[in-house]
Image (cartoon, rainbow, N blue to C red; front, top):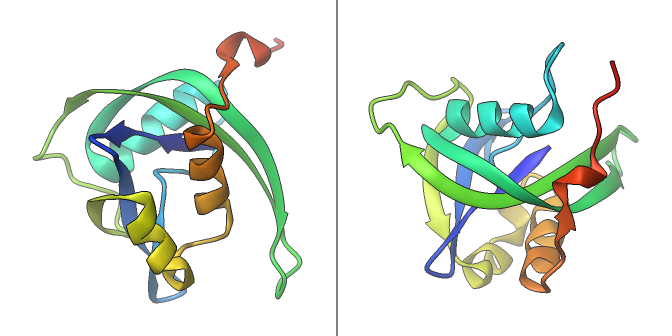
Length: 140
C-alpha cells in the first residue's frame, strides 16, 4: 500500500535505495500480521517520513508486473491528511531522504521512479478518484 499526501500542489515522496540505486516513491510498504491496510499505510508513512498520516480515501487498487523479473505488485493507494511530523524520528534505513515534489517534477524524472505505479496513483488522485475506506473490510 502507499500514501498520497499533498501540500500546496506538492507531494510527499521518499527517496529510497532500490538495488543500490536511488529512486522516488510514495511512502509505501507491506502489511504486517494483525494489521489492517489503513493501519499499515499509517505505520509505513511514519517509519519512512516521520509524518503522521490519516487515510481518508482509497484512490485505487493497482496491479503491475515488473517487466524484467515478472514479479507482480498489488498496490492499495490511500490519500489523506498529514496530521503531525516528528523531525527527530529515525527513518527506515533504506530511506535516503524525503522530498515535496510536484507532479511536473516527478514526470521530468520518470526514469528515477520506483515503478510506473507512482505516477499512475498521482494522476488518479489529481483526477479526483476517491473511494470510501468502507470499501475495505477486515474479516476475522
